[in-house]
Length: 133
Image (tube, rainbow, N blue to C red; front, side, top):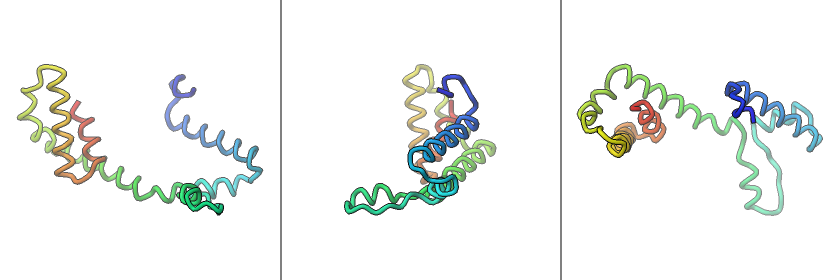
């Protein structure tokens, strides 16, 4: 709902976290500190079903730090490659081919594959393909 009202993303996320914590307090009868601990470290509960235990014991924000740092470094590397002109020099030979939407799609796909092969990182390929537009 807040996205429809064009509320800034940070405020939207903060309000969603706050509302989720209030719902957690109401429905689970746990305190703020316990719910914040679950949010950062993850939920641990043992059932007699191993499959359910594997789903529930995934971890919280701390388990995602490796992925978050990978995304941050991919964005930094993409920005560095753009500022140094590497991206433009790689794509310049193909820019004259863009005359139709299909050509733009083809060049974007090719640049994504090329950046994935050279950068060995799918996040870098994704962000670099966004920069070519």
